[in-house]
Amino acid sequence: ILWCYANAERLARRGFWVVCADEKPNFQVLERHPIRHSIPGSIAQREFDYTRHGTVNILFFLIVHSGQMEAACFDAKSAEHYVRELRAFRHRHRHLRGVYLIHDNDPTHTAAKTRDYLAGGSGWWRSRFTPVHASWLNQIEIYFSILQRKALTPNDFENLDALAARITAFEQHYRQIAEPFQWTFTRAKLDAL
Image (cartoon, rainbow, N blue to C red; front, side, top):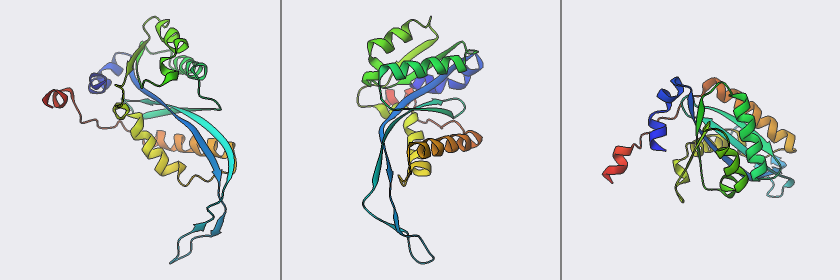
């Protein structure tokens, strides 16, 4: 994984992308009603009660060398949905020679259906799994933190469509300002531990 990050730009010039993928599963879509809106000298207050509008699963792909990301929402987390989105990603980027796919050992990522799809891709997908208990190695976790702070907090949406619209708007905004994350943990630092 560290080799992929260190060589992402060089690989991209050769037609191979390093892509991180992960889900934000079962994100609860909540609607809260304000008691008082913010005014100068006073913060907004809101009820602790909320209306629950269900849950959504959001799958993200982070293209490491550019910092660009792509998202897909679906109602149930499963290997079928994951494979469907992997197929759609490959179709959108069919000009590539291949992808180094960094993902964790989630059951949807290691399911037989997913393994079969990745293995049947004629080497286009080069799957790399983060070690168990080390999902922090997946750069998509950095993006999750940004998304949470900038678009999903506070969790206040009238319905599932409002959440999807917020994610789409943030995705469009982020595309304009995206830059690759500067990964400083190298193989040499790992060997020195």
